[in-house]
Image: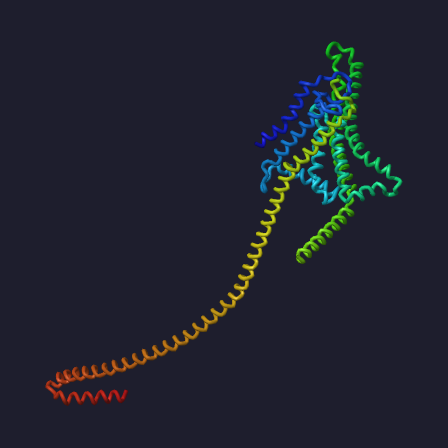
Length: 299
Length: 167
């Protein structure tokens, strides 16, 4: 059962590789393009192209789903397995992160932050097995950034629409246009930051390998036959670059995205006003109840 | 065109990606956080129950210990009392026994003395008689004739009485 779930978690990744080998034409030389389009579904507003990025992100979600089941399928209170320790460690760490950055009120955000971290990091790490990273597609990251924007606005609205509108007029009313721009810029900057980092990593990797290919052709080109064409200099250096751009940058961008989400949501939430309003509402409700009881008693 | 451009905005892809994130959020909530939190809470409850039980047994042990200590203290006193009583009893009894045995010994001695007295008298009587008989036989032999037995006896008796008086 345990092994089966682990295999089920790995299968989507293998499926991604298989799909790539079967349907995506091999690129030759230097070409920097977006995701490969498998087919397009006819919809208004430009249609829906089903791309490598889409498919890969679904595969990541499927893989993460089975990995969750694998971690949590047989929990015990005593003599825990390593799987359970990992699961508890993840939950504890994410909750600690959320608690220290957002406060106890936002503790229900922990699964959301975990989802951002998991989806973003795993999507970026797909480059390790040679797949197209969904995070280097602006649409994917923009979706997450818009989700964050919706949450920010929702929590700003929680203390009432008047306080939300008034927050644009601070610290002085004539700065309102700038405040509105910065409000809109938040999701855009988040999306472009993440997307740009991952994509630039891929671009630099491609450029460096192209450069190394040319260099090795210049140096070893005189060698006879196959040896002359083999890019010797591409051994080694791209792997070191890959450690930075794929492993480090991928994880770091996921962490930054999650961190910014937490800070924006909790920073935009006017806590004092919210609790004041809540108390007022409760007092009003209590008063109404008292009045109701009085009228009932009168009858 | 088989590939997307590097930057190409498509509203449907954005919506789908947003939905993906929400789906993953719900998935994590239901399949990772909920079970783990449940099991942690359960373990917490078990641990606190264990602690409660331990505290309870500790209290019980302490109360038992104190009660036993009390009992041990009184037990020492009890033992002292019992020993004292036993010693007193033994003393009294030994005195009684000593007294009784002394009395018994005295009676035995008295009895023995009386018996010895009586035996002595008997022996005297018997010896007296023997001596008379023997001396009568001897004197008849010496004198060659039969002497009067009655006279003889009186004579010897007076002689022995004289002896006894002299002695």
